[in-house]
Image (cartoon, rainbow, N blue to C red):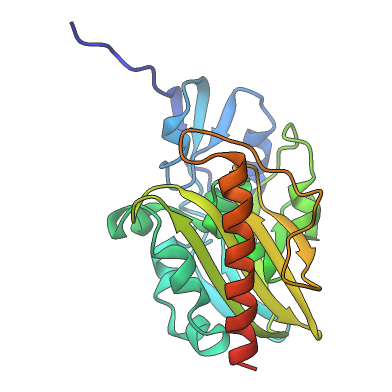
Length: 254
């Protein structure tokens, strides 16, 4: 006997021509933006409409005075292989993204979907949080990723781009995985900017948390928990190891 797994379903597929139209559609509780349709398809919900942003010109990586502006529909693979980002920030994007499933997956997964979903396992969110990135929302405007992280899950807007400031002196990313393309057990990003080392620890398995690394230990009050991939105790130990390694790597490059 075969078991039929529940899956996401839609009554309509909508591809708006303007961001204004997309925003209006998102305000209906039964509609959802699908992004690259990779993590979303893992849901078991039924929705009235799937909203596709592919007509809105949100696929780009632009260098401007305040930093790199990356459109929400830009694929993770485009970010991973961007020479402009590599020249400015080194290998951190490649290191953070190379372990996410496989190249075919990263060719479809979008930055907007990875950030807007605020997933606890996200390598992407961990790196961008440490780098002091900002998000640009159609109605909410520009805010730090830390501010966006704390918005209620019920908040609905259209994320148009992510802005990565260029005032970073050195950024390092590391993660621990049980197997090469599995979800991470712990993620760690360390960014030296303004003379301070900003660290984000993710996959706890909760969403990444940001703090200033003044020594080689994670904050005592940082919460970890257990799931099928790792125990709470193991995660905490690995997080401390990754933090020390990242600090050493940052010091080597300064």
